[in-house]
Length: 114
Image (tube, rainbow, N blue to C red):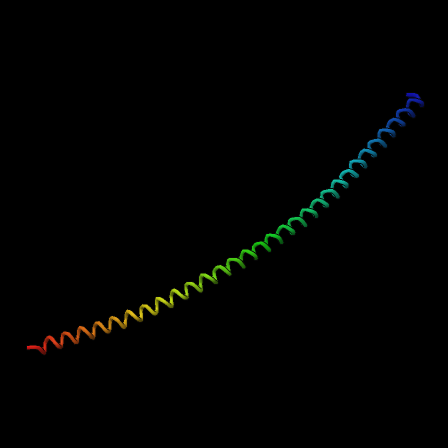
């Protein structure tokens, strides 16, 4: 090869080498940019998930409060029903005792009559 051809070949190799290096740098820059975009997306997504979770918690507590109020009303009604049942049970026991006394009284009067 002649010296001119060698210089031309060397120059072409240098050019290709520089172009490859530029392309690699461009790819690396693009990757860095992609990473920044993904990091930003992740941060925004995490914030949105936190926000939605907080809203769900608040709704859950609201539902808990409503359920607690309803349960309190139902428990009060149940307490009243149980109190009435206790009163009725006591009245039935008294009536049963009265009937037993009446039966005894009738049984005594029947055995004492000739």
